[in-house]
Length: 499
Image (cartoon, rainbow, N blue to C red; front, top):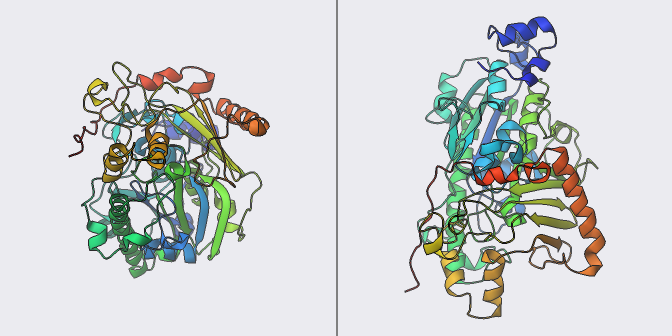
């Protein structure tokens, strides 16, 4: 059993530290007691794969049906400004589990990376403190733990209902409810076949308005609804055994929808997530919070709710104050911004470059400032599939889809199509700045305008200072290592020319 320096600090005195280090007692912060088990909450963490904001009924989407999420929001707290650490599965999930920014996680900061043994994860910390833990569906990844037998999200179960039958009665539990929905591929036409009105489908401003695109979004909605039903079934299972109100139920997605300029990008379409948390024992329901929340905040929240002190190395901040404070709107003045970033998703550059598209951003209520560390690279991967480092990768950092194909095939149709194509697939400058009051869709870069010079400089400094304080290798040195870590995955292949 591994015991980190952070856990040793939690033990409270030298005797307990020695016992824990010798693996004689599973301890985090303090030993669990029978009284603790009666009062500590269960935790159900439900996470979709590629489900982004604002695709839920409670956010005002007129087409997608999400009754389970809407119920959690209605009976709990709905968050309007929740952001991933990175808009890519592996680093996003690593940040959730560790409570740290993905740029601190070494090879786990990349898609299909390796998760180093030295990083603790909250399910293991809770297990050492007396929780039963379990997981089903997609957990951490894609990638592999350094010790391959390590189950980062919890012991694997067929489903949540099986876990509930086999768990230790009377003990609190922590369960990771994963899924592969709404990750591609989709069954084309599934949304329309389910009765969705394509004319009412919500399109981001970065998408051309075309039936192929509307149908593609509807197919995505179809799988979002399947995830929602999965969570709804889990809620019913908790109700049936009388455990729902003693359970923190958190529902979200791991990054934005798998469409051009969404997943893998630092715009809201890639990094802003749905989030609802229900915990009637401590969190007054019917509230909406506008404070910025990071995925790094989940681990310290779960630990604090269990009566444990979050590890010192965690960069996230517990949400317990927002949950239990009973307030709505903008609550904590310190939560006036959030950081996001990206390293390598797919190695889609041109041979022999195995790099990704390193970038970081700071998002406030008024502005989005992005720094691109390698503007000579293709943000969505090279369009030249025959010259790609991994042969066949055609815009390899963007999932193949009807929307992608339509945008590429019609890029020269008119000025609008060209502008949207360039915004999704073209090279970008070293700095981007968006005035969110004037440009909520984040399509007009004003970083080079003199009227915004002071704002750009201020946000640039704030971003740099916070990245340095959190030991980001892109600032303190060593960031090129992200381009060298092994990549164990495949690549999306060139789908062929337009017929």
